[in-house]
Image (cartoon, rainbow, N blue to C red; front, side, top):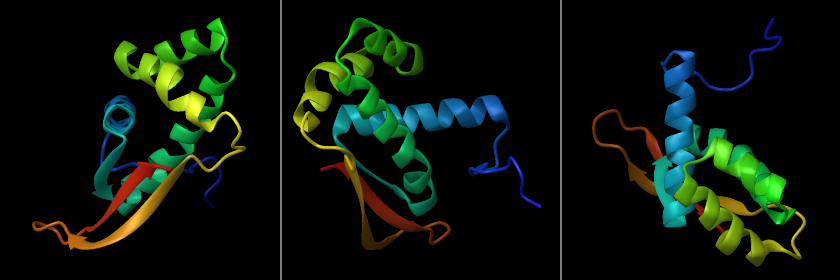
Length: 116
């Protein structure tokens, strides 16, 4: 039974996995769109969307929570630049676009995840 075991492990122990995912989220926020594998994109999509929803609250506590979860530069960009664009949108801030490209070394399917 798979009780309490959702999420992907990516072959890493807990601390390294959390910082790995935080790094991918940071790159997505700073760049606006990134190329990554399908599994990684599906793993970070709900986390990024929850952070955008948090940033849309537009209060000091939301900014402090974002700064606790992200590097300062990414948190401020999400709070001041990205979230105001989605003020009238109720969800679905990112999209995953499949590409025909696969990674050379292991043929993992590549996707593009971006803000809408």
